[in-house]
Structures are given as structure tokens and as C-alpha cells.
Length: 630
Image (cartoon, rainbow, N blue to C red; front, side, top):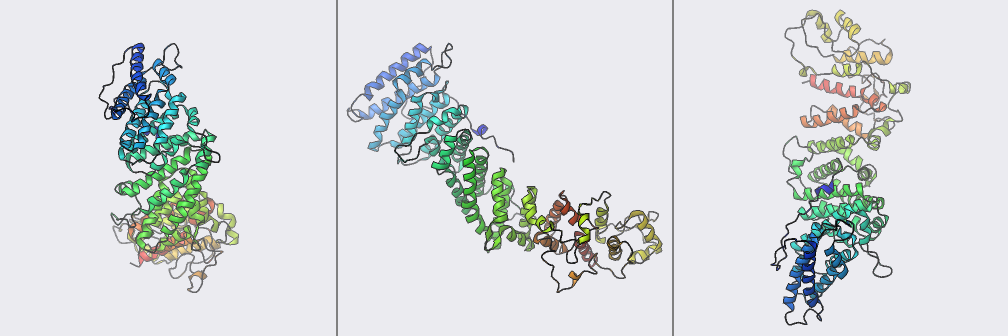
């Protein structure tokens, strides 16, 4: 998954906002700066007369004063949004903004309006209007307002007021998140301003405050557009924190951001369906069309994607803390027990969810903690990996979901995964005879291994011969020696489909078990052994493992993963076709790996294994016997 361009997902609001409720005046037509300044001063003088009264209820028309201040404020902020810097001094504030800064216009008006909150009437409505006005000013201003201390101070006063106990509403939440989002976009353009929003501790021993950040955290797991907008804004702050040690330490040491993310994942996971509606017999994993119709799963993936993005861009302290919280606060206490439910349907669902999560994340640090959980965490004395490996041998649906999970794990191309599954059992080379260890690195340049595997194609999978075989081929078909068979051995080598090029039969015939056993014994014993009189699996005729009472030594086994795959391969005729598709695909995925030890174990047909260890060729030959018995 490529890194998401979260900044591009923030849609900047353009001009054309509606006036707040109660403001009947229209946006004035912009004239020259001198005229606009005169209009602004006129509005301000009328507001000052109201502000200088003793308290909001001192005058008989207190409610009228509130409405008048609201209308005048809307007109003044509209003028400020259109103000421009002088061409002769592009870095200095424009004339209107300079006047507003000198008079501390924003903070004085806001402080007067907040006095009305103590009376408890219309607090929510006024707060929504204040948020809309400041959002309009920030988003439409034609000069960088956040560079100026009085503007930042007014914004902090408003954000602090939003933390007071006020009945929440969708309009209030939307206005707050929209303003915070616009502020984060402005800070992304000027990252150096972020630390100005970090307030010192209000009292000794208290933590500093970053209201811009703390007001967004409660919306991080919210559904819909509001939650997505909050996550986008938070991600901008995370990216800014990477270049600010002060902000990075604040988020890691003085905020609940990382615990909220991790515990939020746990809460969202608990709301996922315990049973998955399977669309068909071939279903084995959750695709996009499957989870788009499940709102709870879509919300979980959105939050998981956000965690992945935070770890990509945040300060290293935040990255480490979030990874630890996800491991200890979500994977171990939630995913661990979920994967060990007693109901088969719940096991299928949890395994499918885990496979989807692994496909949905891309950040190496987050992938590492998921893999650490799978490979090392123990649940009831067994690792998660051992439990998942054992389920490959279970019923058809659970087996398919487990095979899909291991396919995803192998697609990660992670050495730790391959080491835990296969290589740690193969590295000691106890599965091969001592004399064969130097041959582990042998490379099959001429495709002889492929030739032998192709010779195992069952008769039922080949085309019918258009005419009966010649008499001289009868002895070949029975496994006895013949001149034709000897000639084919000299020309094509061991394991090739034996067909006389001069014969009218144009389709190759399958090699018999006795012929294949002869080739294997010739390779291992120098070619001096005669063909066996009766068909047997290659390498199994003299193997003590074929006796029912013999169990392979742990030092000789290639590991539980390969053992369960081979056992499932031997039962291909009893598996469903969909299980066999996944099973053979997984084995082919392992065989394509460039690691010499794994390649020699699966593909080197000349390698002599310990008597108790089966090779892939032997397993495939057993399947061929089953096909011939049909």
C-alpha cells in the first residue's frame, strides 16, 4: 500500500459562507482600503459602546445588544477576511488587520460574548455562530493571520470555551472540527507556528496544553465525514510533530492520544460480526466488496488505516508508544482470545479479519508488531502461529481461511515468518542424510526436477490416445523391461514421460510407479539397482516410516507447517477443489522462494532424505496412486 496523501483529502472551503443566524446584513462590496477601514472603525465604535457597559444584563435591551454585537462582528470579520497587505510592505499586516490587532478586536468581542454563557440561555447556538465566524475568517483570509499573537490568543480562548460543559449537537461538533481542520491546514503551510499554540502549564506540576490537538482527539473514532475530517487534521499535526521535539514529547507524555487509538481499536473490534455470511463455496478471504457493506468493519479499517498513517509520519516517540499500545492494548487482550474461540464460525471470522488487517497495513513498524504477536505471543502455552498452522488440517472452510492467511504472510517476504514456519527446522539439515548436506546448494540447470514432477501427471488428467498402443509398448506399460523403454531412458533421462517418438501415439503416457522408483534408486544408489517387481511410492519401499508404529524424530521433521501441508496434499482427492487451489498455490509460493535450503527441500528430487522424512515428490506420487485407483 502506498503512502496516502492525506493533505490532498482536506477540501479547503471557499468563499460564500452563509451569515450566522440573526445576521441579516449582506457581505459589503469591497471598496478601496481607506473606505473599508472607515467602515470597520464605524462598526467597531458601535460595538465598543456596548462592550463598555457594566455587564451584559445592565442595559434594559441586553438581548438586543447581543444581537447587535453579533451582526457587527460578522461585518467586521468579513472585512478582515478581504483585507490585503500593502504592495509596498507585503510582509506587514494590511490596514484593517493592523487596526484589529491594535484594538485587540477579536479577543474583546469574544470575551464579552462568553459572559453570556453563565446565564445558560442559547449557549450552544452562540458557540456554533462563533465557530462559523472564526472558521470563515481563517479559511478566507488573504493574509497569514496565525502569525499574529492577538489572533492566536482569540482562537485559544474560543477553543478553551469549547471544552466547557455544553450540550453537544451535530452542528456544534461539525463547526468545531471544521475550524480545527482549517487551522491544521494553515499550520501545515507554516509549521513553525505550531509551538505557539502549545500553552504552558496553568499551574506548577500540571501538564502543558495543546488545545488544537486535544479538542480533535475525541473525534478520532467517529463515523462518517466528521470522523474522517478529524483524522485528517490529526494526521497533519502528527506530521508537524515529527519536526518539533516539544510537540512530540507533549503528545507522547502528556496526552492520551495513543491509548485512545489502541483502546478504540479494541472497542471497534468488539462490534464486528461474530459470523461472516459466506457468499459462495470458493470464499476464503474478505475482499473490498465484502466489507464495504459492513459499516462496523469499514469503520475499523478506517481507524486501522489512520494508525498506520500516524506511525508513518509522527514523531519517533509517538510511533513507538502507539505501536506498544496496539500490541498490548489490542492484539494481546483482544485478537488473541478472538482467535481461540471455541465456535468454528467465530474462528473463521477472526482469522479472516486478521488476514484482512495484514493486507490493510503497510508501515513496517506496525507490520512488525502484528508479526511479533503472531510469531511470539503465547495463548494457553501455544503460540498463535502454532494454533493457526494446526487449523490447516481442519474442516474445509476454516482450512481455506487459514491457507489464505499464510499466503498473505508469505507475500510479506519477511524472513522472520519463513524462519518460524520452515527454515528453523531445515537449517540443521537433519532431514537429509549426512552425505547429502553439501548438495543443498545444487542448482537444477536442466529442469530435471520439473521433468520428474511432470511425469506424475495422473492418467485421468491426460488426453486419451487416438489408437491402441503397439504390442511392444505393452511391456512398458506393465513396468517390465523393453527395448523401447531402454531407448527412452538413454535419450530423455530419468523421470521423463516415456513416449516413442516414432510411435503413432502422440500424447505422452504416464510413468509407472515401478519406473519412477527405479529412477529414484538409480539417483541415490548410483544406478546399480534393478527395478522393483511391484509398484511402490518413490523412496518409501525401504523407509521405516512406512511402518505404522514408527514416528519421525523431532530432529528429522521438517516442521509442523510443512507436515500439515504435505498431509493435506496427500488427501487432495478428499479435499474440495477450492482447498486444493489454495493448497497448491501455497506450496508453489514456497517452492518459488530463492532460499537454497527451502528450494532443495521441495524441488531437488535427487536429494536423499532421512527415512522418516517425506519429499514433495513422494507426496505427489501418493496422490498419483490415488488417482490411478479411481
